[in-house]
Image (cartoon, rainbow, N blue to C red; front, side):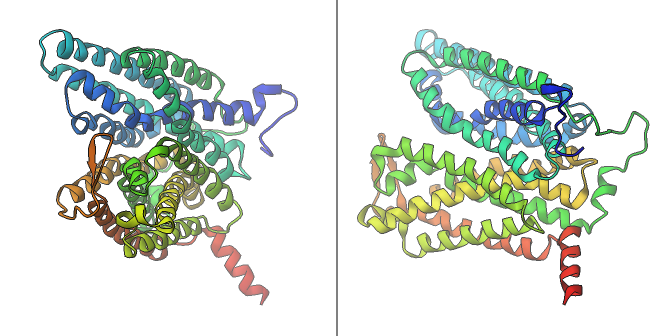
Length: 455
Protein backbone atom coordinates (compact mmCIF):
# COMPACT_ATOMS: atom_id res chain seq x y z
CA UNK A 1 0.00 0.00 0.00
CA UNK A 2 3.02 2.24 0.50
CA UNK A 3 2.19 5.78 1.47
CA UNK A 4 -1.45 5.33 0.47
CA UNK A 5 -1.24 7.68 -2.50
CA UNK A 6 -1.17 6.86 -6.19
CA UNK A 7 -0.21 9.41 -8.84
CA UNK A 8 -2.41 7.71 -11.46
CA UNK A 9 -5.81 8.16 -9.89
CA UNK A 10 -5.36 11.78 -8.75
CA UNK A 11 -7.58 12.83 -5.86
CA UNK A 12 -9.51 9.54 -6.08
CA UNK A 13 -6.51 7.65 -4.70
CA UNK A 14 -5.10 10.42 -2.52
CA UNK A 15 -5.03 9.65 1.22
CA UNK A 16 -5.82 13.26 2.12
CA UNK A 17 -8.96 13.41 -0.03
CA UNK A 18 -10.11 9.85 0.75
CA UNK A 19 -9.35 9.74 4.48
CA UNK A 20 -8.01 12.88 6.20
CA UNK A 21 -10.41 15.51 4.79
CA UNK A 22 -13.57 13.37 5.10
CA UNK A 23 -12.46 12.37 8.60
CA UNK A 24 -12.18 16.04 9.57
CA UNK A 25 -15.53 16.90 7.96
CA UNK A 26 -17.25 14.17 9.96
CA UNK A 27 -15.51 14.80 13.27
CA UNK A 28 -15.62 18.61 13.11
CA UNK A 29 -19.39 18.29 12.70
CA UNK A 30 -20.24 15.75 15.38
CA UNK A 31 -17.76 17.30 17.84
CA UNK A 32 -20.12 20.25 18.30
CA UNK A 33 -22.03 18.06 20.74
CA UNK A 34 -19.54 19.46 23.28
CA UNK A 35 -20.99 22.95 22.73
CA UNK A 36 -23.99 21.89 24.82
CA UNK A 37 -23.06 24.15 27.75
CA UNK A 38 -23.36 27.16 25.43
CA UNK A 39 -27.00 26.39 24.57
CA UNK A 40 -28.32 24.52 27.62
CA UNK A 41 -29.28 27.58 29.67
CA UNK A 42 -31.07 29.15 26.70
CA UNK A 43 -33.00 25.94 26.03
CA UNK A 44 -33.92 25.64 29.72
CA UNK A 45 -35.20 29.24 29.79
CA UNK A 46 -37.22 28.67 26.60
CA UNK A 47 -39.04 25.50 27.68
CA UNK A 48 -39.35 26.12 31.43
CA UNK A 49 -37.16 23.38 32.89
CA UNK A 50 -33.98 23.67 34.98
CA UNK A 51 -30.57 23.56 33.30
CA UNK A 52 -29.78 20.40 35.28
CA UNK A 53 -32.91 18.63 33.98
CA UNK A 54 -32.31 19.70 30.38
CA UNK A 55 -28.65 18.67 30.79
CA UNK A 56 -29.62 15.01 30.65
CA UNK A 57 -29.89 15.47 26.86
CA UNK A 58 -26.09 15.79 26.68
CA UNK A 59 -25.51 12.81 28.99
CA UNK A 60 -27.86 10.71 26.87
CA UNK A 61 -26.06 11.80 23.69
CA UNK A 62 -22.73 10.54 25.06
CA UNK A 63 -24.37 7.36 26.39
CA UNK A 64 -25.90 6.51 23.01
CA UNK A 65 -22.67 7.48 21.28
CA UNK A 66 -20.96 4.66 23.17
CA UNK A 67 -23.82 2.20 22.82
CA UNK A 68 -24.34 2.81 19.09
CA UNK A 69 -20.60 2.49 18.47
CA UNK A 70 -20.61 -0.82 20.37
CA UNK A 71 -23.65 -2.27 18.60
CA UNK A 72 -22.99 -0.85 15.12
CA UNK A 73 -19.24 -1.48 15.03
CA UNK A 74 -19.75 -4.43 12.68
CA UNK A 75 -21.76 -2.24 10.29
CA UNK A 76 -18.84 0.21 10.17
CA UNK A 77 -16.45 -2.71 9.65
CA UNK A 78 -18.37 -3.98 6.63
CA UNK A 79 -19.52 -0.76 4.94
CA UNK A 80 -18.18 2.68 5.87
CA UNK A 81 -20.47 4.29 3.28
CA UNK A 82 -23.56 2.92 4.96
CA UNK A 83 -22.31 3.87 8.43
CA UNK A 84 -21.21 7.40 7.42
CA UNK A 85 -24.60 7.96 5.73
CA UNK A 86 -26.40 6.78 8.89
CA UNK A 87 -24.23 9.21 10.87
CA UNK A 88 -25.01 12.10 8.53
CA UNK A 89 -28.77 11.58 8.56
CA UNK A 90 -29.04 10.91 12.31
CA UNK A 91 -26.84 13.80 13.42
CA UNK A 92 -28.52 16.37 11.17
CA UNK A 93 -32.02 15.05 11.88
CA UNK A 94 -31.34 15.06 15.63
CA UNK A 95 -30.20 18.67 15.47
CA UNK A 96 -33.22 19.82 13.45
CA UNK A 97 -35.53 17.80 15.70
CA UNK A 98 -34.02 19.47 18.77
CA UNK A 99 -34.83 22.85 17.23
CA UNK A 100 -38.40 21.74 16.55
CA UNK A 101 -39.04 20.66 20.15
CA UNK A 102 -37.37 23.79 21.56
CA UNK A 103 -39.79 25.82 19.44
CA UNK A 104 -42.74 23.69 20.55
CA UNK A 105 -41.75 23.94 24.21
CA UNK A 106 -41.26 27.72 23.98
CA UNK A 107 -44.75 28.17 22.52
CA UNK A 108 -46.27 26.08 25.31
CA UNK A 109 -44.30 27.81 28.07
CA UNK A 110 -44.21 31.43 26.92
CA UNK A 111 -47.12 31.84 24.57
CA UNK A 112 -49.53 28.99 25.23
CA UNK A 113 -50.42 27.01 28.31
CA UNK A 114 -47.87 28.86 30.45
CA UNK A 115 -46.44 25.63 31.82
CA UNK A 116 -43.43 23.56 30.94
CA UNK A 117 -44.13 20.90 28.28
CA UNK A 118 -43.07 17.36 29.16
CA UNK A 119 -43.46 16.42 25.49
CA UNK A 120 -40.90 19.09 24.52
CA UNK A 121 -38.43 17.81 27.11
CA UNK A 122 -38.85 14.19 25.99
CA UNK A 123 -38.54 15.29 22.35
CA UNK A 124 -35.22 17.02 23.09
CA UNK A 125 -33.99 13.92 24.93
CA UNK A 126 -34.92 11.73 21.95
CA UNK A 127 -33.51 14.05 19.28
CA UNK A 128 -30.36 15.38 20.96
CA UNK A 129 -29.76 12.30 23.10
CA UNK A 130 -30.87 9.23 21.16
CA UNK A 131 -30.93 10.20 17.45
CA UNK A 132 -27.88 12.46 17.55
CA UNK A 133 -26.19 9.89 19.78
CA UNK A 134 -26.46 7.27 17.02
CA UNK A 135 -25.00 9.79 14.57
CA UNK A 136 -22.17 10.48 16.99
CA UNK A 137 -21.23 6.83 17.48
CA UNK A 138 -21.30 5.82 13.81
CA UNK A 139 -19.77 9.12 12.68
CA UNK A 140 -16.93 8.85 15.17
CA UNK A 141 -16.06 5.29 14.12
CA UNK A 142 -16.49 5.54 10.34
CA UNK A 143 -13.23 7.29 9.35
CA UNK A 144 -10.90 5.82 12.00
CA UNK A 145 -10.01 2.47 10.42
CA UNK A 146 -9.83 4.08 6.97
CA UNK A 147 -7.33 6.63 8.29
CA UNK A 148 -5.15 3.91 9.83
CA UNK A 149 -5.19 1.98 6.54
CA UNK A 150 -4.18 4.97 4.40
CA UNK A 151 -1.57 6.23 6.91
CA UNK A 152 -0.19 2.84 7.95
CA UNK A 153 3.23 4.25 8.91
CA UNK A 154 1.77 7.17 10.93
CA UNK A 155 -1.46 5.75 12.32
CA UNK A 156 -1.35 7.91 15.41
CA UNK A 157 -0.88 11.11 13.43
CA UNK A 158 -3.78 10.23 11.12
CA UNK A 159 -6.31 9.26 13.78
CA UNK A 160 -5.12 12.13 15.97
CA UNK A 161 -5.80 14.56 13.13
CA UNK A 162 -9.42 13.49 12.76
CA UNK A 163 -10.10 13.07 16.47
CA UNK A 164 -8.51 16.50 17.02
CA UNK A 165 -11.25 17.79 14.74
CA UNK A 166 -13.77 16.42 17.24
CA UNK A 167 -12.04 18.37 20.02
CA UNK A 168 -11.53 21.53 17.94
CA UNK A 169 -15.23 21.60 17.00
CA UNK A 170 -15.99 23.14 20.41
CA UNK A 171 -13.47 25.94 19.88
CA UNK A 172 -15.01 26.67 16.46
CA UNK A 173 -18.67 26.04 17.30
CA UNK A 174 -18.96 27.73 20.71
CA UNK A 175 -18.36 31.33 19.56
CA UNK A 176 -20.48 30.76 16.44
CA UNK A 177 -23.40 29.45 18.52
CA UNK A 178 -23.02 32.28 21.01
CA UNK A 179 -23.11 34.86 18.22
CA UNK A 180 -26.05 33.19 16.47
CA UNK A 181 -28.08 33.27 19.69
CA UNK A 182 -27.55 37.05 19.83
CA UNK A 183 -29.32 37.43 16.48
CA UNK A 184 -31.92 34.66 16.32
CA UNK A 185 -33.92 32.17 18.35
CA UNK A 186 -32.31 28.92 19.47
CA UNK A 187 -34.62 26.79 17.34
CA UNK A 188 -33.62 28.67 14.16
CA UNK A 189 -29.98 28.24 15.11
CA UNK A 190 -30.48 24.47 15.32
CA UNK A 191 -32.24 24.42 11.93
CA UNK A 192 -29.40 26.31 10.23
CA UNK A 193 -26.64 24.29 11.89
CA UNK A 194 -28.44 21.05 11.09
CA UNK A 195 -28.40 21.99 7.40
CA UNK A 196 -24.73 23.11 7.49
CA UNK A 197 -23.57 19.94 9.24
CA UNK A 198 -25.58 17.78 6.86
CA UNK A 199 -23.69 19.30 3.89
CA UNK A 200 -20.33 18.87 5.63
CA UNK A 201 -20.96 15.29 6.71
CA UNK A 202 -22.54 14.26 3.40
CA UNK A 203 -19.46 15.59 1.59
CA UNK A 204 -17.29 13.54 3.97
CA UNK A 205 -19.50 10.51 3.34
CA UNK A 206 -19.03 10.83 -0.44
CA UNK A 207 -15.24 11.24 -0.20
CA UNK A 208 -14.52 8.54 2.39
CA UNK A 209 -13.01 5.40 0.87
CA UNK A 210 -10.71 2.58 1.97
CA UNK A 211 -7.53 1.98 -0.06
CA UNK A 212 -7.90 -0.24 -3.13
CA UNK A 213 -5.38 -2.72 -1.74
CA UNK A 214 -7.35 -3.44 1.42
CA UNK A 215 -9.58 -6.50 1.32
CA UNK A 216 -12.46 -6.95 3.75
CA UNK A 217 -13.73 -10.55 4.08
CA UNK A 218 -16.60 -11.28 1.70
CA UNK A 219 -19.97 -12.50 2.92
CA UNK A 220 -19.62 -16.05 4.21
CA UNK A 221 -15.84 -15.82 4.36
CA UNK A 222 -14.41 -17.17 7.62
CA UNK A 223 -13.35 -14.44 10.02
CA UNK A 224 -12.42 -14.73 13.72
CA UNK A 225 -15.12 -13.49 16.09
CA UNK A 226 -14.49 -10.45 18.27
CA UNK A 227 -14.02 -12.65 21.32
CA UNK A 228 -11.60 -14.93 19.48
CA UNK A 229 -9.57 -11.87 18.49
CA UNK A 230 -9.56 -10.48 22.03
CA UNK A 231 -8.46 -13.86 23.40
CA UNK A 232 -5.28 -13.76 21.33
CA UNK A 233 -4.03 -11.83 24.37
CA UNK A 234 -4.98 -12.39 28.03
CA UNK A 235 -8.53 -11.05 28.40
CA UNK A 236 -7.37 -8.89 31.31
CA UNK A 237 -5.32 -6.96 28.73
CA UNK A 238 -8.47 -5.72 26.97
CA UNK A 239 -10.27 -5.16 30.27
CA UNK A 240 -7.32 -2.99 31.32
CA UNK A 241 -7.53 -0.89 28.13
CA UNK A 242 -11.31 -0.46 28.58
CA UNK A 243 -10.91 0.58 32.23
CA UNK A 244 -8.08 3.04 31.46
CA UNK A 245 -10.23 4.66 28.80
CA UNK A 246 -13.31 4.77 31.08
CA UNK A 247 -11.49 6.21 34.10
CA UNK A 248 -9.63 8.85 32.08
CA UNK A 249 -12.90 10.11 30.58
CA UNK A 250 -14.70 9.98 33.94
CA UNK A 251 -11.99 12.10 35.60
CA UNK A 252 -11.80 14.46 32.64
CA UNK A 253 -15.55 15.11 32.55
CA UNK A 254 -15.72 15.54 36.35
CA UNK A 255 -13.37 18.52 35.96
CA UNK A 256 -14.41 19.77 32.52
CA UNK A 257 -18.12 19.83 33.42
CA UNK A 258 -17.33 22.60 35.95
CA UNK A 259 -14.67 24.28 33.85
CA UNK A 260 -16.32 27.72 33.62
CA UNK A 261 -16.88 27.90 37.39
CA UNK A 262 -13.30 26.80 38.05
CA UNK A 263 -11.90 29.54 35.80
CA UNK A 264 -14.07 32.01 37.69
CA UNK A 265 -12.81 30.58 41.01
CA UNK A 266 -9.27 31.27 39.81
CA UNK A 267 -10.19 34.93 39.39
CA UNK A 268 -10.64 34.90 35.63
CA UNK A 269 -14.40 35.49 35.45
CA UNK A 270 -13.96 38.23 32.86
CA UNK A 271 -12.18 35.96 30.37
CA UNK A 272 -13.96 32.64 30.98
CA UNK A 273 -14.94 32.40 27.29
CA UNK A 274 -11.37 32.96 26.11
CA UNK A 275 -9.97 30.38 28.55
CA UNK A 276 -12.69 27.93 27.46
CA UNK A 277 -11.50 28.29 23.85
CA UNK A 278 -7.89 27.78 24.96
CA UNK A 279 -8.86 24.64 26.89
CA UNK A 280 -10.54 23.34 23.71
CA UNK A 281 -7.26 23.93 21.86
CA UNK A 282 -5.42 21.91 24.55
CA UNK A 283 -8.05 19.18 24.16
CA UNK A 284 -7.52 19.08 20.39
CA UNK A 285 -3.76 19.46 20.77
CA UNK A 286 -3.66 16.51 23.15
CA UNK A 287 -5.54 14.40 20.64
CA UNK A 288 -3.09 15.20 17.86
CA UNK A 289 0.13 15.64 19.84
CA UNK A 290 -0.04 12.58 22.09
CA UNK A 291 -1.10 10.26 19.26
CA UNK A 292 1.57 11.56 16.84
CA UNK A 293 4.17 11.22 19.60
CA UNK A 294 3.04 7.64 20.23
CA UNK A 295 4.01 6.76 16.62
CA UNK A 296 7.65 7.12 17.69
CA UNK A 297 7.30 4.77 20.68
CA UNK A 298 7.70 1.02 20.87
CA UNK A 299 4.60 0.74 23.07
CA UNK A 300 1.72 3.23 22.81
CA UNK A 301 0.65 2.41 26.35
CA UNK A 302 3.58 4.60 27.43
CA UNK A 303 1.46 7.60 26.43
CA UNK A 304 -1.30 6.58 28.86
CA UNK A 305 1.24 6.22 31.66
CA UNK A 306 2.50 9.74 30.89
CA UNK A 307 -1.04 11.15 30.82
CA UNK A 308 -1.88 9.60 34.18
CA UNK A 309 1.40 10.71 35.81
CA UNK A 310 0.93 14.31 34.64
CA UNK A 311 -2.70 14.29 35.80
CA UNK A 312 -1.72 12.87 39.22
CA UNK A 313 1.04 15.46 39.74
CA UNK A 314 -1.07 18.51 38.85
CA UNK A 315 -4.16 17.23 40.68
CA UNK A 316 -2.12 16.54 43.82
CA UNK A 317 -0.52 20.01 43.75
CA UNK A 318 -3.87 21.81 43.46
CA UNK A 319 -5.48 19.48 46.01
CA UNK A 320 -2.83 19.86 48.72
CA UNK A 321 -2.48 23.64 48.26
CA UNK A 322 -6.29 24.11 48.38
CA UNK A 323 -5.89 25.69 44.96
CA UNK A 324 -9.57 26.02 44.09
CA UNK A 325 -10.31 27.70 47.43
CA UNK A 326 -7.37 30.12 47.50
CA UNK A 327 -6.81 30.79 43.78
CA UNK A 328 -8.41 34.25 43.83
CA UNK A 329 -5.96 35.28 46.56
CA UNK A 330 -2.79 33.93 44.90
CA UNK A 331 -1.56 34.42 41.34
CA UNK A 332 0.56 31.26 41.59
CA UNK A 333 -2.39 29.12 42.70
CA UNK A 334 -4.58 30.69 40.01
CA UNK A 335 -1.99 29.69 37.42
CA UNK A 336 -1.85 26.14 38.81
CA UNK A 337 -5.65 25.81 38.63
CA UNK A 338 -5.62 26.87 34.98
CA UNK A 339 -2.64 24.57 34.30
CA UNK A 340 -4.50 21.63 35.86
CA UNK A 341 -7.54 22.26 33.64
CA UNK A 342 -5.33 22.44 30.54
CA UNK A 343 -3.45 19.24 31.49
CA UNK A 344 -6.75 17.42 32.11
CA UNK A 345 -8.08 18.59 28.74
CA UNK A 346 -4.92 17.50 26.91
CA UNK A 347 -4.88 14.10 28.64
CA UNK A 348 -8.61 13.66 28.06
CA UNK A 349 -8.13 14.27 24.34
CA UNK A 350 -4.98 12.15 24.13
CA UNK A 351 -6.81 9.20 25.65
CA UNK A 352 -9.33 9.29 22.80
CA UNK A 353 -6.88 9.48 19.93
CA UNK A 354 -4.59 6.75 21.25
CA UNK A 355 -7.16 4.06 21.97
CA UNK A 356 -7.79 2.90 18.35
CA UNK A 357 -4.08 2.69 17.53
CA UNK A 358 -3.32 0.94 20.84
CA UNK A 359 -6.05 -1.59 20.05
CA UNK A 360 -4.71 -2.11 16.51
CA UNK A 361 -1.21 -2.71 17.89
CA UNK A 362 -2.59 -5.40 20.20
CA UNK A 363 -5.29 -7.01 18.02
CA UNK A 364 -4.51 -6.11 14.40
CA UNK A 365 -6.59 -4.28 11.80
CA UNK A 366 -9.00 -7.07 10.82
CA UNK A 367 -11.80 -6.22 13.27
CA UNK A 368 -10.55 -2.91 14.61
CA UNK A 369 -13.77 -0.96 13.94
CA UNK A 370 -15.86 -3.47 15.88
CA UNK A 371 -13.35 -3.69 18.76
CA UNK A 372 -12.98 0.10 18.85
CA UNK A 373 -16.77 0.39 18.86
CA UNK A 374 -17.11 -1.91 21.86
CA UNK A 375 -14.39 0.07 23.63
CA UNK A 376 -16.26 3.33 23.00
CA UNK A 377 -19.00 1.98 25.29
CA UNK A 378 -16.64 3.17 28.03
CA UNK A 379 -17.17 6.71 26.72
CA UNK A 380 -20.93 6.26 26.92
CA UNK A 381 -20.87 5.13 30.55
CA UNK A 382 -18.25 7.72 31.52
CA UNK A 383 -20.44 10.41 29.96
CA UNK A 384 -22.90 9.67 32.74
CA UNK A 385 -20.40 8.81 35.49
CA UNK A 386 -18.10 11.86 35.22
CA UNK A 387 -20.61 14.72 35.46
CA UNK A 388 -22.80 12.82 37.93
CA UNK A 389 -19.79 12.06 40.17
CA UNK A 390 -18.90 15.77 40.28
CA UNK A 391 -22.53 16.77 40.84
CA UNK A 392 -22.94 14.23 43.67
CA UNK A 393 -19.79 15.45 45.44
CA UNK A 394 -20.86 19.10 45.22
CA UNK A 395 -24.42 18.41 46.38
CA UNK A 396 -23.24 16.37 49.38
CA UNK A 397 -20.30 18.56 50.46
CA UNK A 398 -20.64 21.15 53.22
CA UNK A 399 -17.52 23.21 52.54
CA UNK A 400 -18.72 26.69 51.51
CA UNK A 401 -15.38 28.44 52.06
CA UNK A 402 -14.83 31.46 49.78
CA UNK A 403 -18.17 30.95 47.98
CA UNK A 404 -19.04 33.67 45.46
CA UNK A 405 -21.69 34.54 42.87
CA UNK A 406 -21.03 33.99 39.17
CA UNK A 407 -23.68 34.64 36.50
CA UNK A 408 -26.37 34.94 39.22
CA UNK A 409 -25.47 31.51 40.62
CA UNK A 410 -23.36 30.56 43.63
CA UNK A 411 -19.99 28.85 43.10
CA UNK A 412 -18.47 26.84 45.94
CA UNK A 413 -14.69 26.38 45.48
CA UNK A 414 -14.51 24.33 48.70
CA UNK A 415 -17.00 21.80 47.37
CA UNK A 416 -15.20 21.67 44.01
CA UNK A 417 -11.95 21.03 45.85
CA UNK A 418 -13.44 17.72 47.02
CA UNK A 419 -13.82 16.60 43.39
CA UNK A 420 -10.02 16.43 43.23
CA UNK A 421 -9.92 13.82 45.99
CA UNK A 422 -12.02 11.48 43.83
CA UNK A 423 -10.16 12.20 40.57
CA UNK A 424 -6.75 11.79 42.22
CA UNK A 425 -7.72 8.33 43.48
CA UNK A 426 -9.10 7.34 40.06
CA UNK A 427 -6.00 8.61 38.22
CA UNK A 428 -3.79 6.53 40.55
CA UNK A 429 -5.97 3.46 39.90
CA UNK A 430 -5.65 4.15 36.15
CA UNK A 431 -1.86 4.29 36.37
CA UNK A 432 -1.78 0.97 38.26
CA UNK A 433 -3.96 -0.60 35.54
CA UNK A 434 -1.64 0.76 32.81
CA UNK A 435 1.36 -0.72 34.60
CA UNK A 436 -0.12 -4.08 35.62
CA UNK A 437 -3.02 -5.18 33.38
CA UNK A 438 -2.11 -3.80 29.94
CA UNK A 439 0.70 -5.95 28.58
CA UNK A 440 3.45 -4.74 26.20
CA UNK A 441 2.67 -5.10 22.50
CA UNK A 442 4.47 -7.67 20.34
CA UNK A 443 6.45 -4.80 18.79
CA UNK A 444 7.62 -3.67 22.25
CA UNK A 445 8.57 -7.22 23.26
CA UNK A 446 10.53 -7.73 20.02
CA UNK A 447 12.40 -4.45 20.54
CA UNK A 448 13.21 -5.45 24.12
CA UNK A 449 14.46 -8.87 23.00
CA UNK A 450 16.59 -7.31 20.24
CA UNK A 451 18.10 -4.85 22.73
CA UNK A 452 18.86 -7.68 25.14
CA UNK A 453 20.44 -9.77 22.38
CA UNK A 454 22.61 -6.83 21.28
CA UNK A 455 24.13 -6.70 24.76
